[in-house]
Length: 105
Image 1: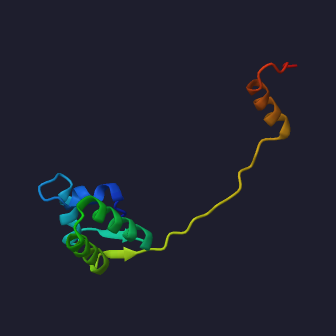
Image 2: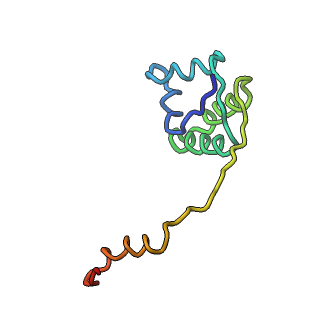
Image 3: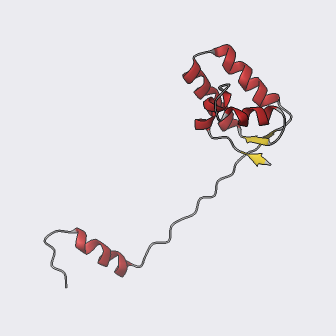
């Protein structure tokens, strides 16, 4: 199974005794593959430093994440497309009620 761990979940999974800590234990025993991008790793590091203030702990966690055999590095791609707008008639009908004092015919 492959997962992406949301940054909001990172700190709770690292706390021994927390409900979420089982997720970290499952990762450490190779029960799933953690998918990360460079951006995600930078965000993990930023959050760990901000929340713990502990460089040594942050480095230990990051080294574990970077070097674990069950981590898959991915490069996400984004697709952007243009919106198709309604015809001008529909746009006019939609904007008329927004203009106060304009007579509606």
